[in-house]
Length: 113
Length: 115
Image (cartoon, rainbow over all chains, first blue to last red; front, side, top):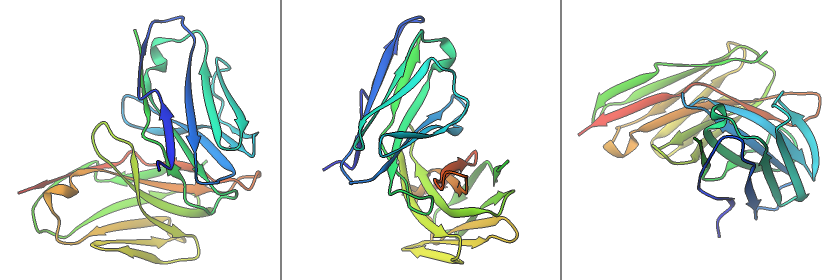
């Protein structure tokens, strides 16, 4: 009965490859997010979708492309991976509107070699 | 531009002490403020959420306060235990034109409680 789940938990890949991270929430929320936690543990928002529509894009390189097939899923596809993409990526969800609590997934640790 | 700062960056206390973690933010136009806990190599666990209209929230040994006008929040942990050792993150949900809150995080305070 996991609320927000992500797959895979760990991802090790080489520079130049393309990879995807999947996120699913079973909370019935309308809004989903992707956050990145860098090597210094600083968390920063990347994207937000509301009911499959992109509403926040924080100047992330266009190699990153989120896709929301339905409001329960938000996947993150990364093209031409670079060393600097190594980080932990967290998915989160909330009810629509800014005043609601955000619930986070367990994170995906991406290592680019 | 909203900025969130947490002081101290690290804290080490003996078991049983009461302690206070501090968080400050530069823009008072927020929806809410959340405190999270992150254990090494793990995800984020939400501890407390304070709406912008509220002054404090309590959960067990934790008490969080919010002073929006001064841009400050504190997380008070009573009778600390070794199991409280973790990184504590403060995040504010900022008001944007899309009426969707994005969380702006502080750098965190890493707490170690010694037995």
